[in-house]
Amino acid sequence: MAEDKAIIKIDNLNIPDPTKPISVFLEKISSVIGEIYKPHQIKSLARAKAEAKIIETRSQILNTKLRSRALTRFVAEEAKKQYRACCTKIETIGIHDDVASVVTSDSIIMNWLLSPLQPGSGIPVIG
Image (cartoon, rainbow, N blue to C red; front, side, top):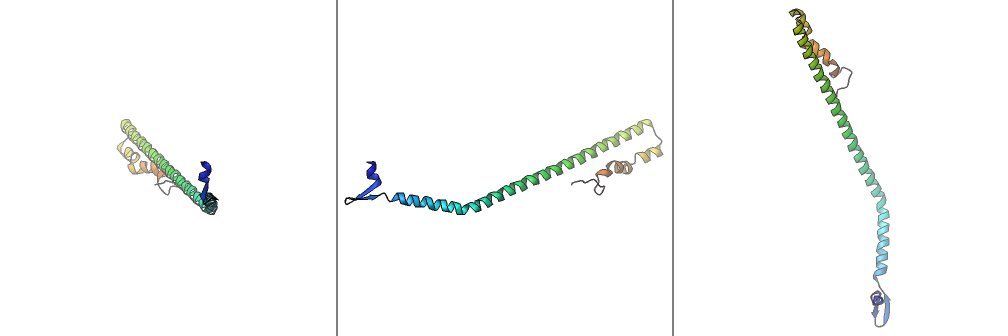
């Protein structure tokens, strides 16, 4: 029965199955097309990897910027806490009003405490 499917019988002529040569031909054409497309596939894969690397690098840069901003904010908050503590100590000690006004001047102390955090001070602040 299997032999009957592989061979077509027309008026006592034994003709081999015509689909086998066609399938071999299609396989050969497919492999040739695959070889022709292979350089394009390699380029596409390289482009995709490069874009992934760019995205990864951008996210690392953003992460660094965020860390820098957080550190800057932390230092500024700590400076404000120190300033408030200093003002409280001066008030409890009871320094004369003229000295206390110079020492607790917001512009002098806050500028002195925060000056390293300002742009143009030599320390890069990423905003």
